[in-house]
Image 1 (cartoon, one colour):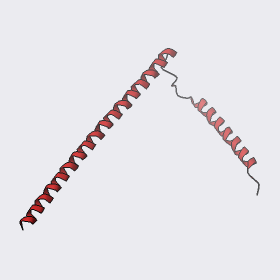
Image 2 (cartoon, rainbow, N blue to C red; image 1 turned 180 degrees about the vertical axis):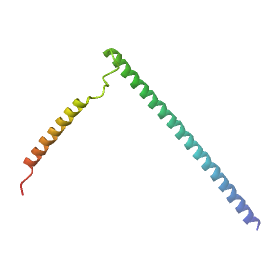
Image 3 (cartoon, rainbow, N blue to C red; image 1 turned 180 degrees about the horizontal axis):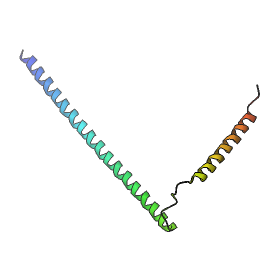
Length: 101
């Protein structure tokens, strides 16, 4: 009977040690992940800032803040017509390549 109690205590302490070990490993993994995410966000923010700064510098060299004006309706219609013509040309070329049934 005493041996059964010793085995039970040893099993319980082994289980407790495993649980504590698992908790420590889990906490370490979570900490590592949180740190890596924070570093990733810092790098993304740094990249975004440098990209914005380079765009501003390029705009100041041109005398204005870049060429970001929206297309006028007439320009947009012209582009759409050009695209439609190009699509039609490709369709005709594909029809010429495909074998007739």
